Figure 1 (cartoon, rainbow, N blue to C red):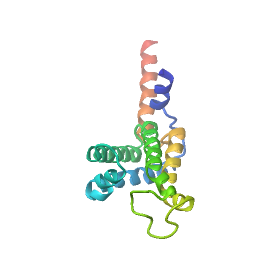
Figure 2: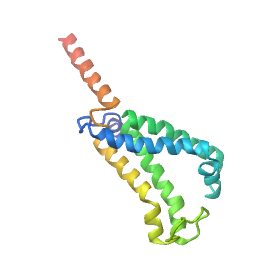
Figure 3: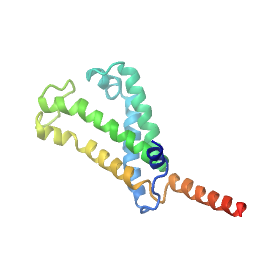
Length: 170
């Protein structure tokens, strides 16, 4: 268990500085989707009610707050692995709770505005954003936040602190 915690809390930070672009993209999408759940009831409470989630108001608010905070953390590159893992799980749940019924043609949500309206092609079309978010988060989970991140700054300060401690002990 200690290895798992260490893996999450000590991500690699030597990745290319351009990882920032992926963090900005994924973090921004989660951030504004979280805000939308508060601004437009049909995107938050209404959607969770139609999907049959228990306590839809509480669920919508918890998910929205998680998306807002997590989006900001991804943008900053802070706790990147933990946030990416959380978002991967969230996106899998979102896909399972919305796209299976779309495939079967039994979705309580409005049908896509243009054909295909059900079946595999409808799912593949509707899943495109979820798919991109999952794979971006999977990349961030494995590669870490990169050099232009708060994770990098924290990692660098830990190394300086450890070197200073060793010099004091000598």
